[in-house]
Amino acid sequence: MNLVMLITVFVLAIFVGVEIITKVPPTLHTPLMSGSNAISGITIIGALLVAGAVSNPARTILGVIAVIMAMINVVGGFMVTDRMLQMFRKKDVKEA
Image (cartoon, rainbow, N blue to C red; front, side, top):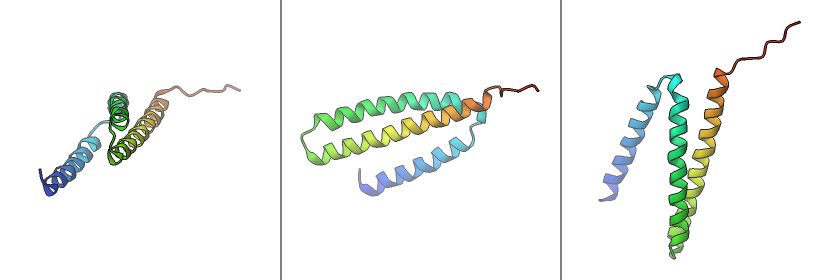
């Protein structure tokens, strides 16, 4: 594939992703985020394998960047999931 075709697919994927995410109701965000975190965990394993298995320095650097990006995704996903779950917790009512 040539570079123009890859960039076109990437840009279209961004637009489709934004459209799908904005249409998800708030009650489904928590289950979707937990599934996304599981997939990101698999991505981290793959990125670690790529970073450690190649002898080419450029590929190793790309593997390390992939690990960093996947870790940011997992941490952000857990933060969003925790925030969504806090919305469903009962607030403590202090009686006087």
